[in-house]
Length: 103
Image 1 (cartoon, rainbow, N blue to C red):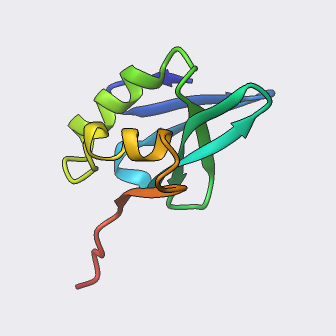
Image 2 (cartoon, rainbow, N blue to C red):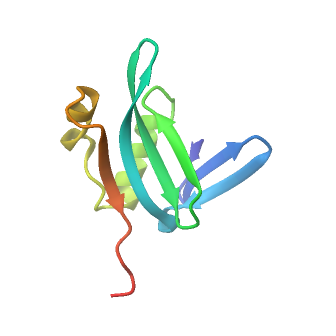
């Protein structure tokens, strides 16, 4: 995964794809239990349903969230949800929903 000025460049196998900031439909953070404990992950869903996942251990995690906050000003700041999620007080946090453009 590579964060660019236009969005997120993702490589999955032989497929390469860019999710443009304007094509993000929703973002959620969730806990994933692993054999040594727990990790916080973020799911980013594009308008066409394509979803990419990143965990807090990935090198691009901090850079990605900083870029998301710049590109999507209504996303929840990490400080408002990370501790509750990592301590198990909640399982999933909705971080961003694309505004309804039909209204």
